[in-house]
Amino acid sequence: MQKTLFDLDARPRESFYFDRGLFLLPGHLGVDVRRRQQFGFISHAHMDHAARHETILCTPETAALVRHRIGETQYREMPLGEPIEFRQSRLTTVSAGHVLGSAMLLAEQDEGSMLYTGDYRLGESYTAGQAELPHADVLVMECTFGDPFYRLPPRAETIAKFLDQVDQAFRIGATPIVHAYVLGKAQEVTKILTHHGIRVQQQQDVFAISQIYEACGCDLGAYELYDGRPKQRHVVVSPPRSQRGSDVHGVVLAQHFAMTGWGWNPQLAARYRCDHVVPLSDHADYGELLETIEQVAPQRIYCTHGPKRFVDDLRGRGHQAYWLG
Image 1 (cartoon, rainbow, N blue to C red):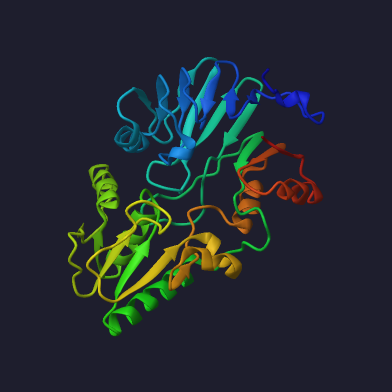
Image 2: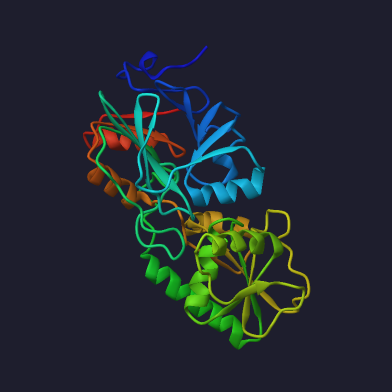
C-alpha cells in the first residue's frame, strides 16, 4: 500500500507522495527512485540515485554519464533552465553544483511549486557549476550534513591546505595518491590540481569518467591514464580505499589522501586509512542548508538523506518541517 504524505503526522496534502522514493503527482514520475519506473527523473549520475527506467528524464550531461553506467534506454534530455511540460506539471532543471550535470528539479502546477534539491552544494565548483535556488512553495531537500558540527571550513582554505600537503609530499619524494569518488569528486580534485599547475595520473575507472567530462565540454587540464609507472611530481587519483580498483601498484613511497566532508570529524578520519583526510565536500554543509531555506523561502520543508534531528532543528527555528521517508 502506498504511503502518502497526508496520512502521516497531519501533514498537508502535497502534489507528491513517498513510497520507497519520491513520486510526483499527477503522472507518477519517480524522482531519484532506485527501482525501474515507466518515467524517472535522475538528478545526477551517482548510482544511489538512479535506475534503468523505461524513460529517463535528466540533463544532457547526466544522460551521458548514466548511459556509460547502465547502458541505453530512452532518454529525455532536460538542459538546465529549459522547462518542459509533463502531465500537468511544468518541470525545469536548475544547477545543483554537486557533480557534472547535477540538477535540482522545479515542479510547477496550478496549485503551487515544489523544488527538489537532490544532492547539492552551494558555492563555486571547478567542474559542477554554481547551484541555483529559485523560490518554491515546498522544498524537498537533501540534508546529509544537517548537524551544526558540520560547518565546514571555507573551501578556499581547504584547497590551500591540500595543495600545501601535496607539495610537502613532493619534497620528500613521495607520490600523493588521492582517493576520491570515481564520478564527481575525482574530477573536481583533478581540476583543482591541474588548475594550480600540478599534473595528474588517473586510475582507469576515474579516467573513463573524465573522458566523458571532457566530451561534455568540461576541461580537466593536464591529466593522463596511470599505466603503473608513477611520474615525478605527479598526483595519482584513484577510487576510495574501500572500493575496487583503489590499489595503486608501482609506487615505492606514497602518501594517501581521502577527500570527504566526513573527514571534518576526527573520530571518523581513521576509517579512511589515509595519511591526510581533506574535508572537501560536494554536499551542502549545515550553514548552506540554512542558507538554502532562506533563499528558497518555502512554506513547507521536507528533509531526506540526513539526520532526522535536523527536522526538529528547523521546527525550533519556526519552520513547518517534516521528515520524508
